[in-house]
Image (cartoon, rainbow, N blue to C red):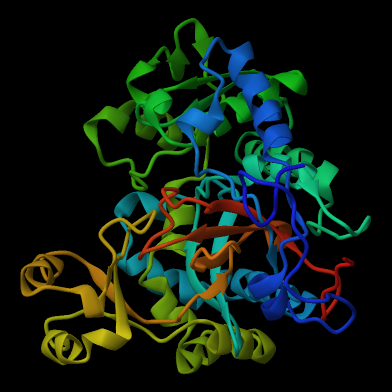
Length: 441
């Protein structure tokens, strides 16, 4: 097993005597006796890469994809996160909410294909006051990688739950979300061919996960391939990849409204109901547009929209104050910028997002030319690495579908964003064993 205190050295024990009553904060600060067997983790992913004729050394190509340490979160906080998932589903189902967000959404979002839209990734910072929802994503990466990471978990307690769905059930649950999307959009007959689509997929950092999705489909008897949108052709009343008619697209594109010319074939087939698409533009408009958080955290709006009072309390308490950046409030926001994080409404992966205290006037003027929201800064919690290394920031990602939590994972990083470039950082498993966590030394 790899060292928990020093990834290149021998295993060391905790800096504290862990036991019943030990808090998650204390364990994140001083516990190094539980970790991730990254050799086993790499071996499982690399087996898929080799089967596809690709270089198989994740340690070389993705050295900071996985952390060697887990993140501890109290059971109470995970229950609160699950409550946010349910409250979000209730609020986004409101007719008044949908009418409001579709007003600023692209026209294609008004087309309803009949399904929720696929897996969601809700990102949280957890501080002394509990979880705070930072953003919602409709094509969240990492779910299959994190499911494998859970199996590579090594610890000194034999029974620490790693996910509400259970380690062995996550992959099947993810597959079922896509098949549910298919059935709701196209009916009960099984899909004949699935395309996993992204721009230049082999060049994407999470390309190994695309191959894991393909392997998952193959393992369950479905034909599937990874491709770029340019390889898809719309002809003969359908979307085609070579000789294969594409029935279902697992969509990893970040052109959420399918506006780019290269995505015209997908757009045409989707609007003609010739191909099921997940996630789809309507899902992004309802869940992931950053402007939506201004409404989801607004008690008065939610009450007028007829959302249940308990759901309102959960959302208002959990969503940091979020405001649309407008010409009317720009100068006031510049003056008060140090307390805000500025994000593009249709942003992803923290691209073009800025902490106010890091902003220059030049960047501020560029922001003014786009559509941005300002979100009150919530300081992330931290995980110590040991061996004198500084702490890493962390966030918690909750993967969910239709109000059900599938998996929790953490991401550890330095700087402003989760960029998978931090030594010791990357995806990390989330461990909990009750309101107070425990490990035995």
